Amino acid sequence: MPVTADEREAEQREAEITALVDRWTAHMRWRKNYDRWREDRLWQEDHQTPRFRAIARHTEHLARARVLDIGSGMGGFLIAAMLNGMCAVGVEPSAEYCRLTHLRGLRYGLAARVIRGVGEALPCPDAAFDIVLAQDILEHVRDPDATLREIKRVLAPGGVALVTVINRLAWRDPHYHVFAINWLPRPVGEWIVERIGRSKRAAQFGDNQRLRAMYYDTITGFRRHARAAGLAVTDTKEQTLSARSSVPTGRYAPIVRMLSRIGLALPVYRLHRFAVASTFELVLRHAGDGQ
Image (tube, rainbow, N blue to C red):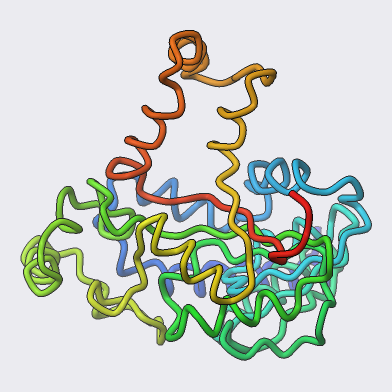
């Protein structure tokens, strides 16, 4: 059968998506699971369930929520959110990522709402969003404090921001996948990264990528930055462990239950968070809002 115009257009679209993903992931070929990791980015919208679960824990009206995704990247979450009926907007500094997001939306007949911009100066009105995502982006911005102030500005009263922060004392660095470099002086850490061939110097990104330029922090340090911006920080894992009535689930649930019975769940978690956890998963609210 002859190829229809729609089929030809879809083939061209998928070819462009593949070319863009390959261009922006080429510097990570050293990853052991590179092929699967690349495939996940080709169909990123199919792998957003953990984020939706995290959001659902903090809002009762998920389908009607106004959502801002700061640093929306390749657009996987943004398109998945639109497919799930959310009023979602992305802000992304890369023109090629915006193009990739647009193409991803066309897979489903969607016009992706993505705006070129940066976290330090969000092109959005005040108090416009019920939920703000700033996940895997704070480490790359040039001014984390300005970004936090912007998150507070665009977040509606009663809204929540879900953010991730890289642990400055993490035993295993989540970007370079190297053990112990966060405990070394930054120039030494960068030298090691270069020597083992994991530098992102050749990456297409224009944001901060070198180790010494990226924003990593301790949990105490980040709370201080957030408080200065007028935001209160909640570590949801810590909050869950503090709620004695909650029943832990997941792979380590039996261990957590045992530690809870002897009163050690929180101390062990805080020790793990101090130097083992690579990333803090946190919720921000206006400082005056109820928890």
